[in-house]
Image (cartoon, rainbow, N blue to C red):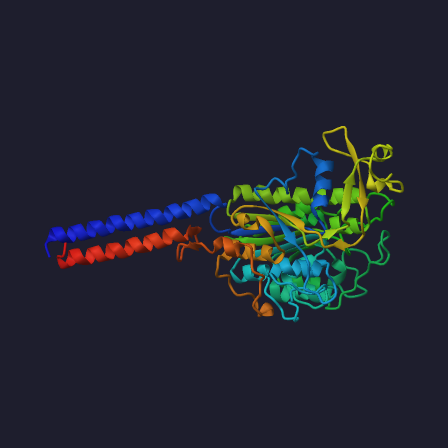
Length: 492
């Protein structure tokens, strides 16, 4: 073969290869631009326990007004999660089944933590993150072993086994950061720890641990232990255990019995400390932050304290968003496990007492139900409660960052797990720890149909490329190979 023929073959193949690469990159760029781009290095998921659409509206009206936006609402992606459990008796979920759906992608029965309906342990997204070398954390103003955080790091048939849950944190799931309340379950009966048994505000609170002195066990494993805000601020290690109350970090006051919502450490401060510690890991991190007060105060029909709890959550979300704005490889999600109270927001009694107003009089409300000021306005509103229990209402989900686009639409709560896993690991998530050896049978996600016509550039972990681009690239590659062979044979 002549040298000129070889040069023509090499030149043609090089040009064609460049064209194929350009097409693939163009498709990848388009997919990246349409979404938020690339793979997530970190995930921060906020769970407002009991926070439905009406609760978010209530918090917004009282905090920033009808024309303002909360930090949790000012996010580019929004969806709606369905919450029913897989329970032989109950249609409405509890926090254990709801948390398990979000953390593991499986439906289960009420009371179950980290197991499926057949009582098999299922891997959690936190455990998968740990297996991939990422750091993980659990932050809540409830007990750190309560149902929602437990769903990310434990596997028990009964959510009340809180000491067993704590032990599993230390010996099996091993999150680097654990911050919240519930010290009672870390100390055996008779050992009050840092927070006194039978405190004045709730004489029934006392140490009730069943697994020995777990605080000492944590310290032996390298955790730095903090019992108040000052100790938390002074802590410098990347393994932190903070227990700031016997039980929840706030008091639960029934409707009409005063407004007291004064957590020992603000949720936003715990969130910031957790991010500071976890973000030292170059492999990335996963952090779950729960605000429990919204649910607890809704159970008490106490709208005033729902507002205060919601403000705590929104301040924590602002901390997470601020970090993500400086690190665009961070996916931030705000979700809920269920709705509590089915509250209604109405005009004030004075307006409703007008005979021309087509509604009930609203008599019998206590001060906790209003009236409340609409922020930045001269208007006011009151709140009515339908129930003091959980409901089957859908709950809102908002997100920002890589993978957030997969949380647009209406979907089962299991899809939140799927979206986190997809954002962190693509289609090949790492296996989880030995505790959760069973494979998660995640519900078909809403992204399945959306991604059916897209593929990833192989072995890059990069964004999706439209299927037509992959097919065209393959066809052009085949044509180039054929032409090159003919040139090399001297056929043309």
